[in-house]
Length: 403
Image 1 (spheres, rainbow, N blue to C red):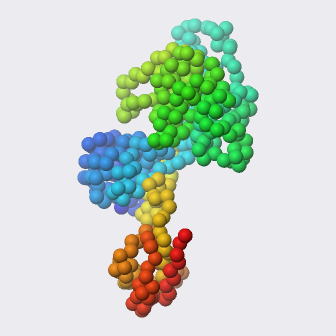
Image 2 (cartoon, one colour):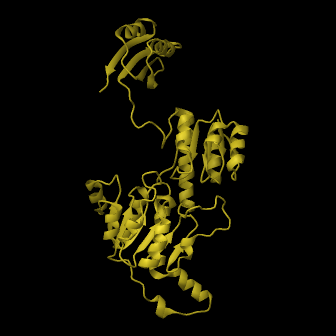
Image 3 (cartoon, one colour):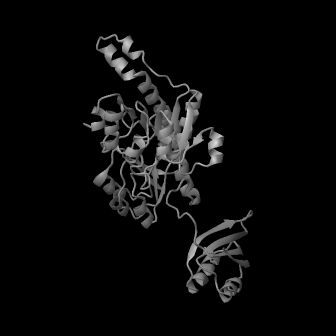
């Protein structure tokens, strides 16, 4: 199986794939037309990307392509809908960078509180200003508000509690029981969270529902002088509203993500929020960029690709249908002989009924197996009988109606 890795990737992950029989093509700076051409040229069955944008024309260039792995947490750089139309599975590596992002989140919080950047800059410029920089507020007993309580949000909450902070949080999936388990106060909305905290940290996935969710209304609920941290995605935060809030409400801001980031690792870059005045810190979208996180992501990518080859199952798949619409379950016990499945599927097809899902499990000893087939509607009784009696290797047939 051929794997095209189109971004920087850990060498030991490449070695692990090669050692188990994969043919690896590693071209770490592919993008746009060059990536489309490489997909067509290599005939890859698996594509691994990190931050590179993957569009429908790229997917269309690879008739053999069956799996696209995002070596990271999000899939916002991938046209998932286009992949689904072409029956290309899309998988990611959720949670493997959670600790790294949480650590950067607290680096930004502590940096803002102690004004680390200004301290260093003045020292390098030959200035001693202990009087100014002795005015830090400290974190103990302050309230951190978290928007998005997935694995990264949870990691941030645990670190906040280690600093003896109070934690309030909002997430669509947050239940009362989960809030109690994490020892956080559940809020009703992003605006409610902002109204209860002094430091607001954003850990939301980017999708149509979260686009611009942290808007002027949310930011204006923060007390004057509060902190805003975004180590998630630029799309979830209204940066124009943030620009106004910095000027009007004296907010301190720590950002790892920005609108219209350069696609390359090095480029000229200017953005209004960094020049907003006040205390605004920025890093270069490096939240997941620790050796520990990248090693964990490489391990997970290898696991996904191996599972796809060895079992056909895609771990962490993001574009499977949420729930089957099957109305009938057909279970056929049979001897493990050629032609049995062809016989079953021929009769199902002859009845004009679509197969929604199926698997065929071999029993110990390899003599027999069981096919489990989910159907869009029940088979007529006469079709079930033809399946049962039409092949000498059939041991038993059971059809069950599904609710």
